[in-house]
Length: 442
Image (cartoon, rainbow, N blue to C red; front, side, top):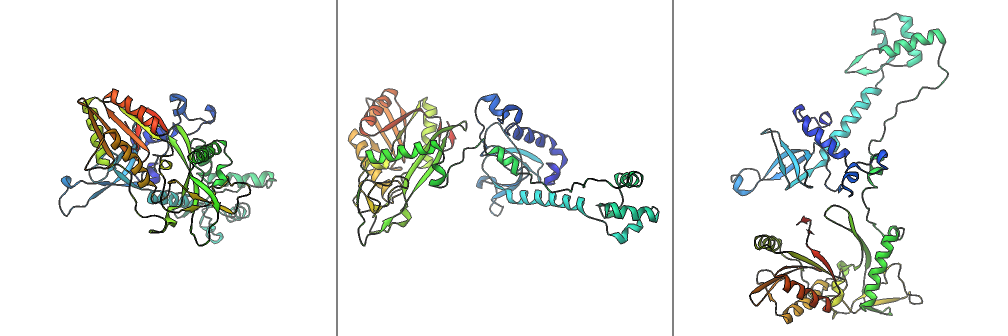
């Protein structure tokens, strides 16, 4: 690994740690194609953070750590992992220090190119042949050289020097005694180093389908699509009508996503039928839009406040949130692939409710839930329209809205009461205490 990337030898300890780290997350036949990490912890390892050893990285230098004309980033070398995923060990050649950083960007193309070029160079060195007219330079009798030419045709070239190896000399002597070999010599071929490895690693990673044809081959994804379609029908999201003339059609497709827990295990197979909102025309298919996400600074603030106050943070999920609000515009889409209605193949669906992917869907859903929180007496933050709070008898309750996820914190009794009210108004899923949110493990 060190020689492959041309790194200094004093990094041998980092190289050993990285090799062991990767080996513990590779399938082994003796474990039934499972990984040592899974055998030890009972959970499938998360492989999304693996990077090419020796790759260059760029680390951002904050304003307070640099002067005006100094570069805004430092170049380092990735040399290892830590116990926390997405925290990497980085070596800086200019200072000779190795630090642990998270806010870095990788440039793996150069490391991969360097590795492939070095491997190709080694194969070329091994397969270079000595021209026949130069074999006379070898210090041995003329007839012996001629015999070697007939049997081997060439000798390997090593660092520009032509020589016959001891193995070749022994083969030539054996040919004189017992005659030429009857079996054909096996030719050296360059092996693909990564095909078998990727085939084994694919068993550890759940692949998300890229098309409907791929999804129908897996019963888990079929069940997810059936559940999504039943939810759409149950909410009367559209009505089937004859295809109107002169009206534009909004495209649609299935999207598949694997929801993973904090430990990397599969939590849910999620299929979503969405509209291709990019085909909508403003003023015809929609009027106004809205970004239904909380500010990241707001999330950081409430997490710090909860830690200081000792609050438990709860999480709830609104099932098919966008279907809870109707739309005013006249929008037509095609039938969901795989769920065409019999004898209505020439018909289309006229939307009665907002569908995921529509330009106006986030704003429609926000209007619905904002009116509901206002009726309950919640006040909206002036700095963040997705942050609500209410004070009841001196007790505080805070709710953060992030698309269809709700984060609740504050007084426990108010949280339980609010959960009951939300369950009566919307189709909710109580996820309990918050452990994993937006890639952060709480």
